[in-house]
Length: 375
Image 1 (tube, rainbow, N blue to C red):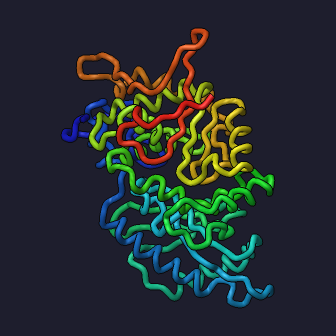
Image 2 (cartoon, rainbow, N blue to C red):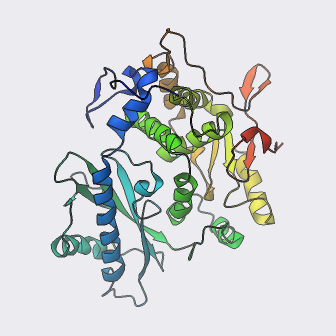
Image 3 (cartoon, helix red, strand yellow):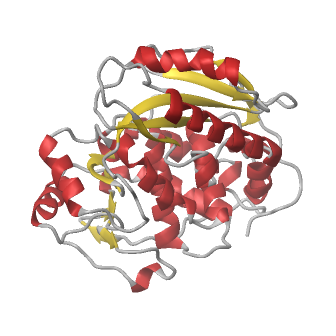
């Protein structure tokens, strides 16, 4: 287990957040760095959770009361897939961002109605935190900020519409017909916000230390822009841990190095899970087979088989950054030797590293015991 004591290490501060760059942090101080620089204060998290609960209740009862089209209503409101969003996942970042989803009974969104609740909410609610409109507003998304009155902690929110495709979710595998209907729309990945509840559940029950590693990877990712979706890196981190460790206590530097190594070899990656969908339904099976035959990297959203996060641009730039970091302090031991990545499933083919496709039916305690190779 990498060092849990000592300072965070000297480093160049991130000009956007005032947080040191991962590149300057010694590998044995990464745990301390995560706890002291990346994770919000517990008091702020509790205040934010209470504020989000009240805002969600306000939205559910007040939004669309006077909508011109009858029958429009907010069925549920969730932040990042669950009240508290990444707060609920346990992967919230200091001064980070999360999504606030309105689960509607229609596909259309009346943005002007949602804009109106902003002023009403601010006028009628007494919150422990400062509630303000975000400085840099996306014209297509309503954005607001919850800021601490005592510290510099804050969280940015994007208010997004989402069709209530799941309905009442009880924690079990969704009805396959939900995914069949999704596939038939032909709109790959467009309805991912409908499945944030599943995305949250996929992460929230993971070990605390793995969530800390996810925060570290997200901070490393945030130091530059124009990269693949952050969620892809979260999934890649989970995959690295499931296949390389599977233990609740592990060496953070080794885990981080493994994620970097996977990114370096992004052209060979093909990852998917079968926690919420599988190959039993013929339509889903045929669709998954097509998805998995696409040009790599292939990283399927465990909650939405139509969303291939590997299709995004920027993997080449991300891989170059990963190669650079592999020789920096964060990936070097005290004696100057390089931190080795975990042993993840690989094979040699024509002199090139290639990954087996891994079918994961449930959480893995001993990953190597529950694999099925897919040709």
